[in-house]
Image (tube, rainbow, N blue to C red; front, side, top):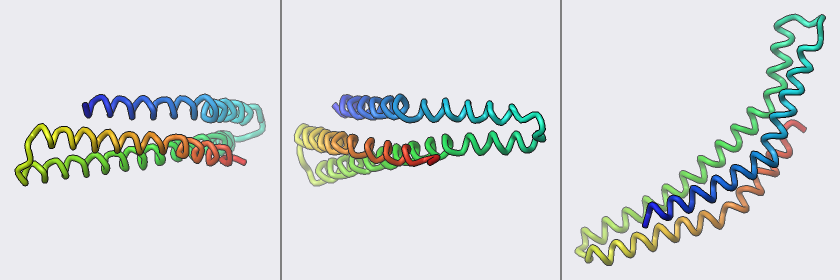
Length: 138
């Protein structure tokens, strides 16, 4: 059951990432490459100047990737903490003498609620990331 919930959460996160990539990251990658190519057109520039120009071109994309990675880590950490709480409650129930089947159902219910709650956060998280990505490099 927990594996099914994990798969459900992973599919939702994958969908969010595909949306971000299609609508934001790919465009930024294209702009990065065009900008970098432009750095190489100045025949008077030194190698150091060209490298600095290319680094400036790559900065917004690197910032965007760092933002997405950070938000994704926060989301995953929060979900992990929630499921850890469920596991701790289940262990406490077993230690207190509760029946295994009852504890298993309680654990499944708790994990399902964690996943449901976090899936409900995905639209807001996606919107927040898209707004942040749109402001990078402007």
